[in-house]
Length: 463
Image 1 (cartoon, one colour):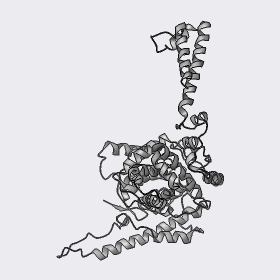
Image 2: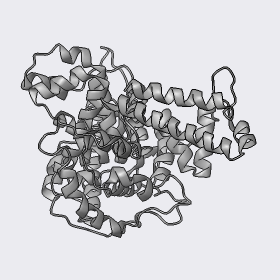
Image 3: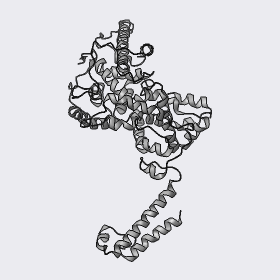
Image 4: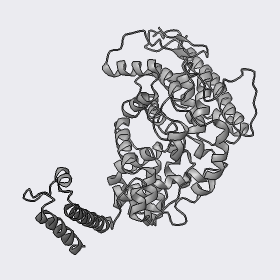
């Protein structure tokens, strides 16, 4: 039976029924252990199932639950009336909020609907009034939440779209825990978008371009032809899709994913959305306005899970250091995406970055992020291969010959070493170590060394 929590929001008792699936049992066990690493893995692969379970999981992931010995952000004083210079803009955005998700803010005390003799509902007006009253109350709570976030952390600058993210946190967690969650999300996930302008995050969005070039060269060439940078997906990234998707369960599933992974992950989801509609995109007129208009609209989709699976694949295939390698772009090591594992580790045994150190990190991030891609975002200059291997290797054109040469050199060094070891009487050790894969000849045998040397010479001849 649903009831109200101390924030006046309807909740479901977690133990009103026994878990019915292995997935739910595993999730509840991870909640009981406060196992952040396990919860992140579940959030990245299948999500947290229900709104009631999210009320338990999201605070644990953000380290603002009752079991956290040292909460990331201190509890708020109910009498604290903090101010911010952004209140006017916040008021405007809040008035435009809650266009979607009316069912999620409905009061739990509405009387059951009845039907009159003509098939109409006698209480339609009353129910509509209740919904509007609930929206009005929610807007007050949302406005207070947003002021608390930027008021208590004045180095964070409010942007239009933050209210969309906070709306979801409010609907799932209620105003008290939701406000604490919003502060943590802003500090550790969204801070690259909370500089004085959005220029740094807009530059960071250029990561989309090298991904497109490697995954679908035709799409990349279209972007290059019409000189389209990926600014069309700004609202997707800065609102975690809460502004563009009107299905509450779909948005919550994406929040499960984003809260469980690196702050850059919304960009990889955006890349997936572009790639999945590549065929239709390539049929558009090759005109900036037409292509931009097409991409600015959220496409129809069958499953959020499809986006998530492909986004994880792209993130593993093109890690941020790998993107740096194939483009030659420089990212500041202090941006949220590159520091996330250190700043907000997935284990309670490791401390999170103290909040008072974040302003200094943000100061060093602005110039570097703002220069990402430089004046020629479509012109990549890959770093030398050896530097890229150390950054999370992503292949580029021309790597084949270099890798062949390195392989040949490695085989040459191996053959010389084996020859020296043979002459030095280390035959027993070498013979135990391995056998050349040709006619079963032991490497200590002169013929074995000759075979390795012949392979080296062939490789060099084919360069």
